[in-house]
Length: 179
Image 1 (cartoon, rainbow, N blue to C red):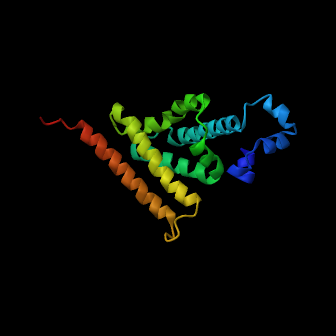
Image 2 (image 1 turned 60 degrees about the vertical axis):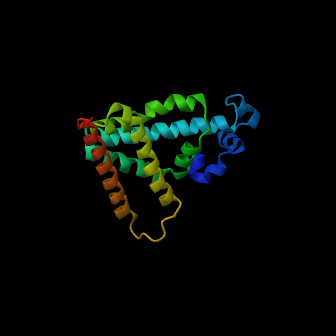
Image 3 (image 1 turned 30 degrees about the horizontal axis):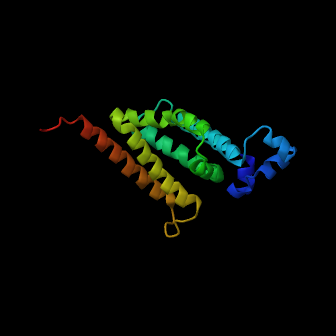
């Protein structure tokens, strides 16, 4: 994770890992399969860190308070570790990565359930949350929002749209269906 913080995504190479560990590349390869393996393990660590931040932020909260805390924890993680976050988005598809993903998703899905989102809709709403917040934070960390002087105002508006949409979906699911 230090390499990503110091040198960015492109700086995460087997040569740099070996140099930082003060070992030869052949020695490094006796412990890891290849660069994709390093990337996957690093992305898993990042996923775990983000999940822990979310879990801590939402503890004892539900509904809008929990979603807001979750979104701010997510945004804070991305601001603190932009290269690690981007690696998570591009991580090699390994068995280890996909085994960890459901565990990392638990706190997010628990927040969504606190709204009364039907269980069959939780994975879909989770995807909407991830895609939406990713779009926002990706624009932010890449300085791609040139005409907005205060992105905090935009983030608050984003959260309002998101919370209102989730509440609407949950309320809609509770209404009796007409035939």
